[in-house]
Amino acid sequence: QVQLVESGGGLVQPGGSLRLSCAASRSIFSSATMGWYRQAPGKQRVPVATITNGGSGNYADSVKGRFTISRDNAESTMYLQMNSLKPEDTAVYYCYANRFGIGYWGQGTQVTVSS
Image 1 (cartoon, one colour):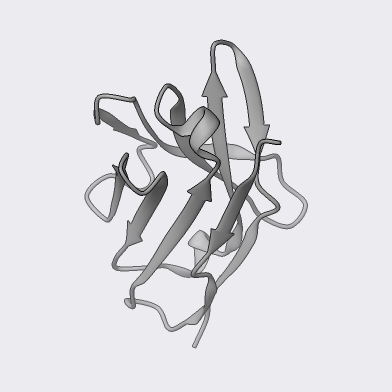
Image 2: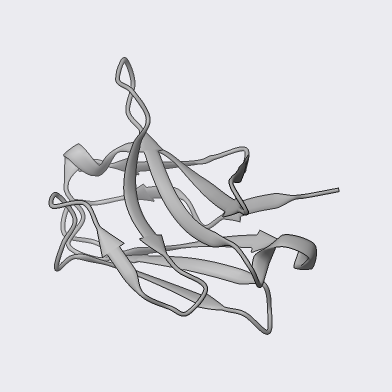
């Protein structure tokens, strides 16, 4: 059974940092392109960052220079380091895995940026 479990969300002040983690089933992680998406209230779910099996990352323009995506293949875990957080980063963040064209989602973790 494929599982993606996010953690690390919470409440942070503007300018602060958070690190999200996504623990994945070993059966999919090593051969999957992974990514983070987010969904703000009343808005569509949009991609934030993706990372290939080889470690190449891509970012949405809105987070470039502030967020860093990484993965630990030995631990089957993906991370999203979020720095210089802004109120507009407030959303539910979802872990996503694409393995041979099949997509999997985590349950999401809430990130709230507010003073």
